[in-house]
Every structure is written in C-alpha cells, then in structure tokens.
Image (cartoon, rainbow, N blue to C red; front, side, top):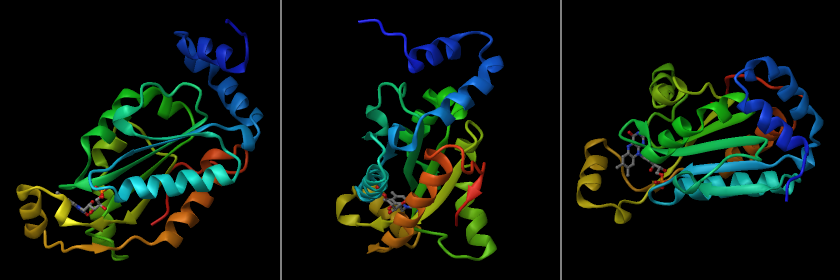
Length: 214
Ligand SMILES: Cc1cc2nc3c(=O)[nH]c(=O)nc-3n(C[C@H](O)[C@H](O)[C@H](O)COP(=O)(O)O)c2cc1C
C-alpha cells in the first residue's frame, strides 16, 4: 500500500535532478531520526570468515545501542534504501579490498556519499604505528576512496588461516611472509563500534569526515 512518509518523500527528492539543492533537507531529515530508530547496514566482504566475524561484532554492538538494521555479505545486498547509516568492511587481498566490497562501493556510491558512512579494513601486514606501515595500509583503499570519501575509516589486524586457502593463495601468503595467526584485537573493534555510533550513526553530535582511527 502507498504511504507518504519521511522516507518516501526523501526518496522522491533524491531522485530529482535538483537533488543537490535538497542536500540541507537530507541533513535535517537525518538529524530528525532519533538514534534508537536509525537503521544501519553493515556490509562486508570476507573470504575466510575473520572479517565477517568482525562485521557481526560491530553490528551487535550497534544493535545493543538500539539501532535496527542488517549485517550482510556485500555481494548479497540488493538495495540500500531505508538505511540511515552504512558501514562497509573488507578483508585485504593482494593490497586491495576484495572485489565484492569494491563493487558494493561502486554500485551504491551515490547513497554512500549522501549519508553517514564508515569503512573498516581487515588486514595482516603493515599493522605498525610507524609512518611506513600507516602509509602502506592507507594505500589499500586508494581505489575505494577515489569513489567515496569515507566519513570514518579504521584498520583492524585480521586472522590468517591458510588451511582454508587454495594452493595459489597459500603460495601468495608465503611469498608475502605471512604465517597463520589470529591478530584480531576485540577491544579495539568494540571501541571503534562505540566511536562510529557517535560519529556516523547517532546524528547531530559530531560528523568528522576522514577520522582515521589508526
Ligand atoms: C590470498 C591472501 C592475500 C592477502 N593479501 C594481503 C595483503 O596484501 N595485505 C595485508 O595486509 N593482508 C593480506 N592478507 C591478509 C588478510 O587480509 C587477513 O588474513 C584477513 O583477516 C582475511 O580476512 P577474511 O578471513 O575475512 O578473509 C591476505 C590474505 C590472503 C589469504
């Protein structure tokens, strides 16, 4: 049945060729949705499961703060309409996000750019605090950031389990000097979920574009 509600009106406005003129209305609309009502989507790309576990932990933390929504593999998302904030995360393979995550960002670039969003990256190399490590891990997202500028961005150390990989990827990992280990820091993950709730989910407090957490 047709209903004229806040989301319908905003969808009409966003489809209009004059949509940029309505940007202040979108911002006002975001500010009017109470935090406990703001729908979130956490979309992830994971090959061996460690990024999926992180995505689900972040989603549970946001749900516990009262946000309804969904957590889903990026490749399975059919629409992002109806979400107030979108979080996208990916494992890094061969110095880039996984193709499903890159494809997700390309498909939903308009919606991601319009509203609050955050990116999280799960990787194994270049986890140090030195400038060289930071520069290298930041470069993993150069192609993604060229499409959408993230509202917040974080890097988490991941987990390598070569028993789940095929021959060529096992060889690739060996050549890159990686050995099986779970480096995930769950405290850092939960802390970030709390900070992203404030900056990208709960409106009106702070909205720091490009807040690089690590
Ligand atoms: C084939 C392969 C290539 C990888 N390439 C990189 C890389 O270039 N840089 C990096 O920091 N980590 C790399 N990693 C580590 C993964 O990003 C890390 O293990 C991550 O936690 C895997 O996530 P997943 O379990 O969700 O697939 C690679 C892992 C695999 C299996």
